[in-house]
Image 1 (cartoon, rainbow, N blue to C red):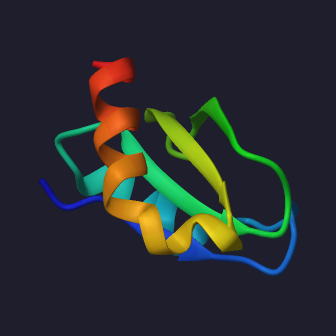
Image 2: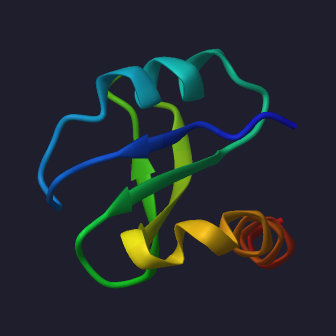
Length: 76
């Protein structure tokens, strides 16, 4: 499974390429690395595809693999 990961400087942003990936994907998982706190949110792309977005602080990037495993196990 390929999970899209976007790196943003803040919580705001349109996540255009991430949404395009999710619309074409067969799974509902995406990751955003940014400067805020950890969270997992439900979102919908502009085309109407629902997905789960794991928001991960920059300092957790070295453990990205472990966080993705946790994310998929708890949201499947």
